[in-house]
Image (cartoon, rainbow over all chains, first blue to last red; front, top):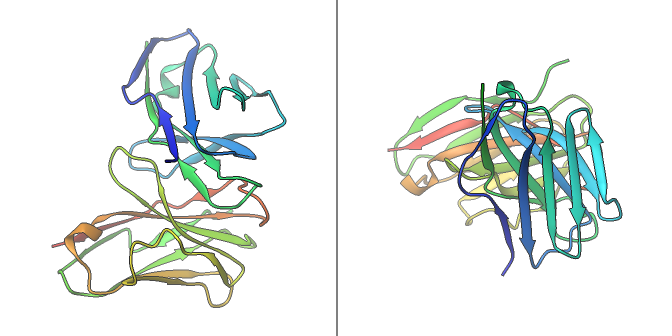
Length: 113
Length: 115
């Protein structure tokens, strides 16, 4: 069956360190993978999209990698700040760039000052 | 500019009643998506539209759920004969273009409680 797995437990890191969040998937062949941030009581906010033929993408302090062989994406936040504390969701399409996306359950990140 | 808006923000209803949830996407956005989100979970796909055409309704749980977007702008998600298990946060999102799972802009959601 199809599955998207993100760290189910919260991730606590010290301010200034790099946070690394994982998204693993099974029985999907995504053309795209997206990362969203969600704060309590708010809707998800888009952060980055990476295509299947891209290995890595960066935006300011954010970096995403996409390994279609391992069926895994890693999301890094460098020089983390308390304001980065939130839940981070990965989302992917099934195949062919189809518009319907499936979200993972999210990983809650807490950056400790 | 204005983001995606949803109304009402909160809806409490009695079991068996019908409810209509409204989504007003960002002006000019072609695609509109409906999701349901349980606490501690990611959004669960329900259905989506490109313009006024419903492209995929595979995520609608049963035939009590329906959605429309008659003029390609505002959309309504209707739940008939509500049940307690329908209680959840219902989220709407829109994206500028069709043809791919591109960046989606989410609204604040409607919290539905069925008593």
